[in-house]
Length: 281
Image (cartoon, rainbow, N blue to C red; front, side, top):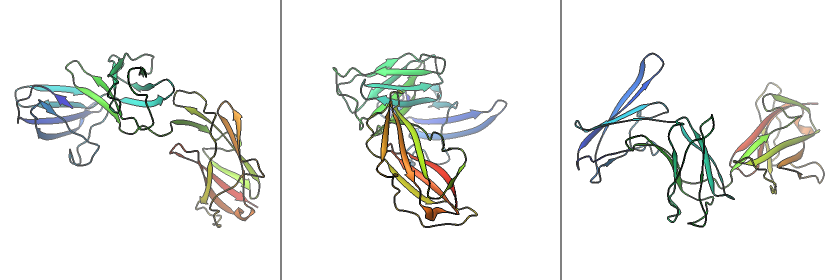
């Protein structure tokens, strides 16, 4: 977004420039008419404005001019990494460590914009919203993070719908290998071990249920029929081991022998966690 006292109806030209270490590798221009409040904005997220192949990425230089006044903005990498609902904190990282980060909570009009300095060597930032001033941050809150340059232009990260559940999945643990095909005897029980934390690193201790789905994975061994849903061995179900650690004992089918399968674990975080298996006799 570029804001200035542009004359109403002024035709603005926006140019995006990109370089590698030696040469300019990209340049594209786009034109728009300034509004009566002196603002010009473009939104690359909705597909119609600007048209393809116009896009902006980290490190680009964006220039806006009406032929008389020119504004220049360097695009930063700004990330919203998570929200802690218990403390009403929004946190993330940025590569522009010399500029403060501001967060607006649009869905709570009583909450003013909050700003914070960047701390740490990796550009970490955290904004604390005081719940006594306005509404708490909820899974449907609408928020945006900003970093302004010296003349008021901003790199912005919008979260129009905060995820319903914000989990960090750590797994699978031994004996399952996430990076390779796991060789298992069909009919054996495979312990699926994992840990879940919040975005702030606190353990999630109240996970009540998970879903395990197995589908055919093409390989030279051939294929077998998939089960609609897999079941835990015996009555073990989902085991809560404490401090965010869980285990699900997956009882594999003897009919899976001489086939490959993709296991998908759904813990309700909107992310499908998978592992590959090669079943032998």
